[in-house]
Image (cartoon, rainbow, N blue to C red; front, top):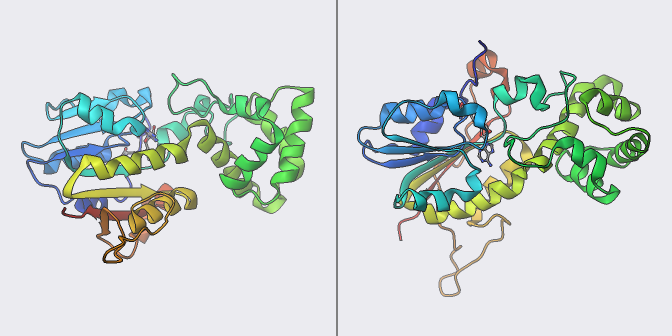
Length: 302
Ligand SMILES: C[S@@+](CC[C@H](N)C(=O)[O-])C[C@H]1O[C@@H](n2cnc3c(N)ncnc32)[C@H](O)[C@@H]1O
């Protein structure tokens, strides 16, 4: 059986949590459980709460009484920490995006490598699929998605091609989509172009950027003073949000200064000034790690 997911920047990210053996930690993106297992290995009597909205991860859950699993979106993290009666935690890890499992299972519809239904939901209890976006969204909204979430250069032409195709026949499968947009796809950069189109759809279907923003805002409340926030991003949109949040303490990236001393009101300080990226060896053994960027922050003492 193919491996569920190879964890990226494993040592560097778990080092970033600065694990205290008796501390409480959150892994917001459990996936194959690679990061969670490493956190548990370094914990003594401490505890770990793992989140993932995809129920395919259930067989990966470790049998370990220090571990609690939450099969929900991490945008509700504060509620779940409260629900389980935990106080503030010592560290939070988020390894964003989709897992290799989600990407490689044809019927999940995340990849243009397979002809499959255009689904792309991480959480299959939710309603909106990529095919709904393509068939039901109005022109302006499609334009905004492909421009803002995919940074697709010829988004106008792409959307015109989609509107024309869907008048004739609903766009249900990846083959339907490919046929519809073929005239817009640059011949020499086909894979890159399709990757952008799929990224845009996936971000919309899963509300990824809103979930990320909501999660980041809650981390400031859920972490203890001195606690660590460790985030791995895989594309520039999510990385910009994390970078702004770490720098200013808000997701808009607006520097708010306190009136008396002129200091920036930020609950976090950077642990690494330079972002951490995978080594050449890691990228050679796991090419999917190539776009990863690791940022680590510490909640300031009150
Ligand atoms: C890159 S993988 C994490 C891999 C994991 N660190 C490992 O070592 O196997 C991201 C995982 O987070 C989940 N995920 C992404 N966004 C989420 C969200 N907003 N709420 C809950 N889970 C999410 C995905 O379903 C996927 O399984």
